Amino acid sequence: MPYMFVSTQIRLENGPTNVGDEFSDPVVMNYLGALKTTMLGNNFSEYHVDDPPRLVLDKLEKIGFRVVSMTGVGQTLVWCLHKEME
Image 1 (spheres, rainbow, N blue to C red):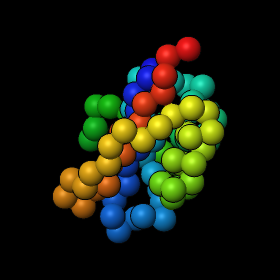
Image 2: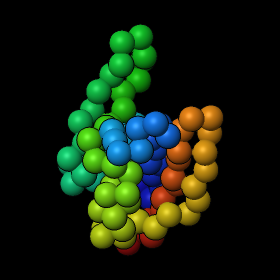
Image 3: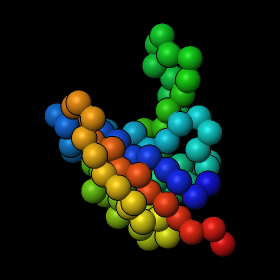
């Protein structure tokens, strides 16, 4: 998967960080130490880590991901990352 989103709530900028959905690459999620969870009432799963976004972005850069864009949506910060296909 060449694209991925990383997000966190502004008030939680020290973590936890959302690093993927149920269709995310399990190898990348394992590398990040992410846990797959389903919140009560949701019909989808998400991967989360306790690390702050800066550490997550640093880890992803080491395996070839680059930030394409970043924005704030309400109280949420979202980064879009891309990795070149090998």
